[in-house]
Length: 65
Image 1: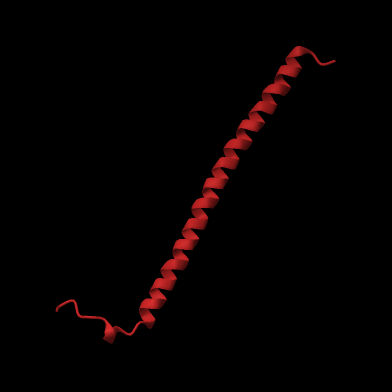
Image 2 (image 1 turned 135 degrees about the vertical axis):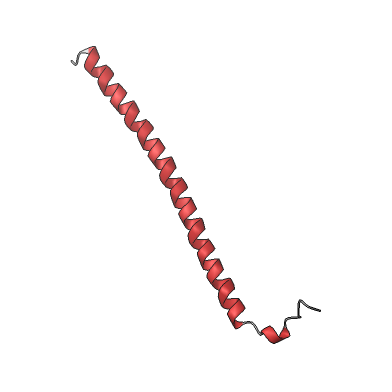
């Protein structure tokens, strides 16, 4: 049988491991979410730029009236 101090240390370490794991999981999920949003933004930006390059600008009305 382990002494009470050893049990308390094991319980404290386990709780700290759970806490650190939850914090790391939350951080990684937020980082992954922001990363996916950034990649989607870059893809949409590239598509808008390509659409503007391929557009027939002679059909666009002049801004000068």
